[in-house]
Image (cartoon, rainbow, N blue to C red; front, side, top):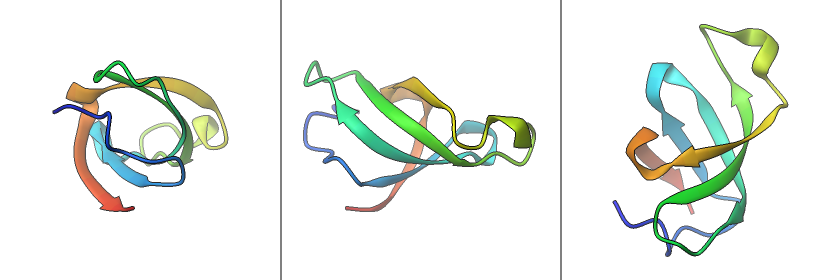
Amino acid sequence: MDVRTIKVGTRLKLQEGVLAEVIENMDDGEWLQVRCLESPARPDEVGTVELCHAQDIVMVLSE
């Protein structure tokens, strides 16, 4: 998946049921910086910011 068209504020469903919001698009077609909104397996990660690779995206929920 080429993520260049995904905008800041978009919510994504990631691997392991994680819900994240895009806070920066690196415009390289592969990486996004996201904030974790829900993490069923690791609740302590909610609120953290990390890089997300295009392969980790299960579904684009909202744009």
